[in-house]
Structures are given as C-alpha cells and as structure tokens.
Image (tube, rainbow, N blue to C red; front, top):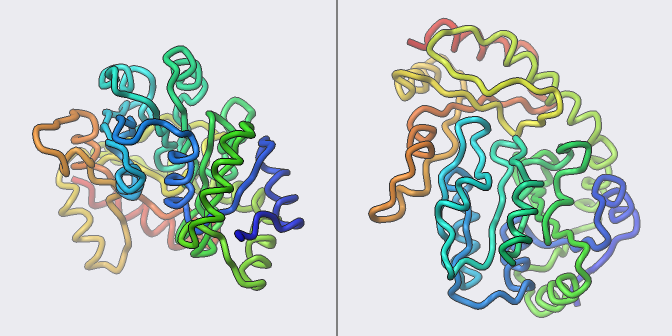
Length: 315
C-alpha cells in the first residue's frame, strides 16, 4: 500500500495549492504517467505537448501508452498556448499536457477553456513552476490534473519525489489505485526526506522571492544587443532565466566553460527526434537559448560574473 498522506507534509502542500486531492509519487514523470492512466483516455490516442520542454515529458507519454504530438511554442513566452495546440489537434487528440516552460506560465486559463470546449483532458505540468502563480492562482492548481516535481534542480529540490493534484475525485481514486499497485510510482521516502520536504516547503515564499530578485537582476543588467529577453513581469518565477543569443550561441557557451562559467542550453527542440517535423519557433529557440542559474543559493557575485561575461562576449 502506498503511503498516501503525511499530515504535516500534506498540510504544507495544501497551503500552497488550491486542490482538494493531493497524491505523492516517486517523481514528476511517475506523476505524469499516473495522471494519463487515471484519466482513462484510450490507449494509443494523441496527447499534445510542447516541443520545447524536458524530454521526460515525451518519454512519459510514450511509456503510458499514448502518442505524443509535438506543438510549436510562442516566442512571446516560450510556451505552448491555444494557437499552437489548435494547429496540431486532430480527431485522435484526447489530451493536452500544458508546460510552464522554464517556470514561465503558459496561458493556462485559455487552455482550460479550449480543453473543455473540445472535451480534452488538460494536464498541467508545473514541474518547473512550484510556488509560482498566474493571475493570482497557484501554478499546480489548473486543469483536470496537475503534476509537480521535487527532483534535482527544481524549485523545491529534494532529488526525489513528485506530486499529482486534482479536484476530480474519480481521477484521484484511479490514480491512487494505480500507485498502490505499482511500486515504481509510489512515494516511499525516509523520514529524513520527509523532514527535508517539510523544511523546504516552509521556506518556499523565501525561495520564490530570491528567484524573482535574481530574475530582476538578470533582466536589468543584461544589455548586450546580441541577446533577446522575454518581457519582465515581477510575478514570473523562473526555474532558470532564459534568453536567446542571436549569433554564435555555441561559441559563447564554449568560451564561458573555458572561463569556469556555467551557462546551460536547455532545451533542444524535441522535433529533432521526429522525422519530417519542423516547428519554426521551437527550432529557433533550440539553436539560440541559454539559461542562467537563479537558484536562491546562487551567490550574487557569481550571478553578476555571468551577466558581465554575457554582456562582454555575446557577439
């Protein structure tokens, strides 16, 4: 039997998420697989997802027995929104996995309306967005089911664990039954891991504040004409701060490494894994994206060093 609730942990999560049902899983991927199976959509059907996101989303859809259909993303927020979903929807489409890319919220309220109008299951992937909000509502509380990760480098990083949330009692009952009968999906932490999660959840507001402060620093100080930044909004909580390098991105990253500076290039377009699929915006982002770590524990001196390097060397 899966450990279905830990009173203190559930209480902390309930303070942050406006959901009736919470269910811990072994990972974010396990939460997504469980969510898909719990929705009872027909196996083999199409599930739409963005081409710019963690590959684990695509693999989870496949492992659950469904066909991932890649949609392009908007250059306004690097997210998949209604126009991109509409472009690839077919009669075989049964569900949408909406991802808050890099922690930047997608237009999840518009996707909710679209999904209801078209009788589609909407799964909100908030794995990179725990603690963020959209129009005053917590990310992780939209759609039919939401998923969150507590894995490596997430907003709450415990290197283990995920979360499924829903207001639908049938989905919850189905999900609980799935996890109770699959040890791989079950959340079986040690007491120390539970304690760590509780401590970090109690510090979530502080974590978010520091990420937003670091985001503002990045947006304010990055001045190079060879970069493109998304519009600044103080309610965005990034996982890593994303920007596009117009020219010679790979040379910049290589030079940064030679100077002992870490700049990442997540994510590659997943359309590269498909034959005959070209998604223009996803391809452009894939070729030009860099990410800056803005963790709460990132020293200000380290962040400033990265920003100065980009301003000086982006050609």
